[in-house]
Image 1 (cartoon, rainbow, N blue to C red):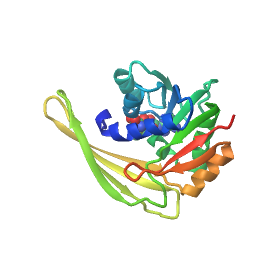
Image 2 (image 1 turned 30 degrees about the vertical axis):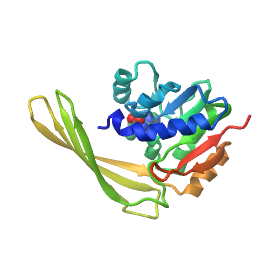
Image 3 (image 1 turned 135 degrees about the horizontal axis):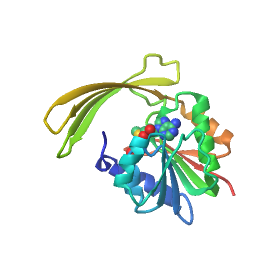
Length: 224
Ligand SMILES: C[S@@+](CC[C@H](N)C(=O)[O-])C[C@H]1O[C@@H](n2cnc3c(N)ncnc32)[C@H](O)[C@@H]1O
């Protein structure tokens, strides 16, 4: 539903944080949960990117946009490639981790693929402390089809670690016919302190980098 243009500003921020956090700057970057490759579209100019997603369809979209990147099918909780990278990047796919054990499993995957002296950058959409229920909308047109969506995020039980994200999606085909699809996703929502505790438990040195316009991100190092 998204296009690379919507990710330009935040991708520039992530690229800056990755480049400035290590001397020499990272060359190889593993993107865990890369989706259709919108962030990678911008980062690939600075880094050699390897993209991993559990969805063959999302990987197929990304391959057409990012043919110069390596693409791999895998679950970011269990993936073990047997090699390491200068940096590991975990963007909004981490929101699909709804339990502490799944979140920790992704952190362990990042740690296993981060070289000694390397860095990992985790970018959750939301943290428990700053979460606000709300709505969003978007979409775009191509010659042969168009999409518009309304996104409605709610938190039925503020005492647990999940929120609901409901999408009402309108899909217009080449003949102008429109169908509506409802999709409900359950996303994880964790406290900053929980993030930092788990990152340190798996072996990272972790800190929060705050950016007013983008969001808080977790910058981690794997000690030499
Ligand atoms: C919002 S999309 C990512 C968009 C991406 N940041 C981009 O730049 O285009 C979230 C992705 O997480 C992936 N995902 C969810 N759970 C996963 C898992 N356990 N392992 C790998 N990918 C997963 C989904 O397949 C989906 O492609």
